[in-house]
Length: 220
Image (tube, rainbow, N blue to C red):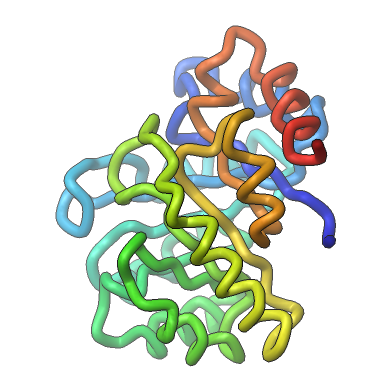
């Protein structure tokens, strides 16, 4: 089993204490941060734009993983890479030009991620394995933090892990949604290399300690 990466989700952080909270999880051992960008069209919510990504970049040495939950993401890739994204994930459902969107991320100089919603067939990820660095399996319907983990996500992770291991072992598998101390261990065993957690970390009075507890739960 590869190294476990827990990526705290900035969506759940207190923006008024952003630098403080990011420093707490980084001190606790975080090496990745996850930033959800929502446009109110592809998903029924609005969140961050490029200025927040830039603020995260200034506040941390962590790898900045930007998840675009927006329509026509290929139009915005360069903007978010310029703001400081190290990796950009786009949704297969958000554009008819998936290959173009993935190529735009690579051309802009970032790592490439492809995300799929809970009922989207994994065949599109299988076809894209040679083009990506990370495959993101949503374990909730995207758009809101704090949702419960969909148990079918573990079956999807297992299926995708077998495909990945056979065809593109360099690709990381990420899971996003409902990750907490109860769900993280099973998701890790199912195949997730990168586990996104928001409320379970930043909903705590001590995000650093919550991050450490998640790490222990993932390894148990």
